Image (cartoon, rainbow, N blue to C red):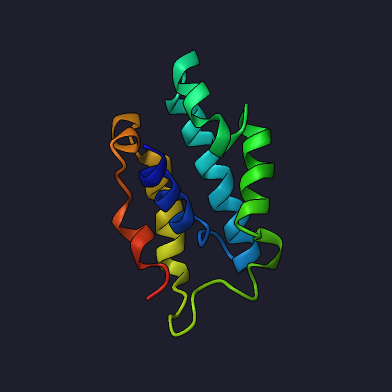
Length: 116
C-alpha cells in the first residue's frame, strides 16, 4: 500500500497553475482523497506515518516532503518538459477517483504524463 500511494503522491506533486501552486493543489487533492477513502482506525493508523493524523497535518507534511515552496525550480526532472494541461487533468481525475481505485494503487493516466 505504501509504495503505490507514495508513487501516486509524487505524480500529483505537479498538478495546478504555477509549479508551486500545482504542488499545493496536488497535495491538497491527495490529502482530501486519502482521508475520504481511509476511514477506519486501522486504515488511519497504517497511513499516519505518510499522511499524518488528518487533512491539515497531511498537507503540511506532504508540502514539506515534496518541497512545494521550491517547486518552481524543480517541477520536472532534468530532460523532461512540464505539461500544464496534463496537470489540470490529473487534479480533475484524482478528485473523481473512487476509493477502491485509490486503495488498489490506481493512478489516473494524465498524472503519469505531467512530465515527459
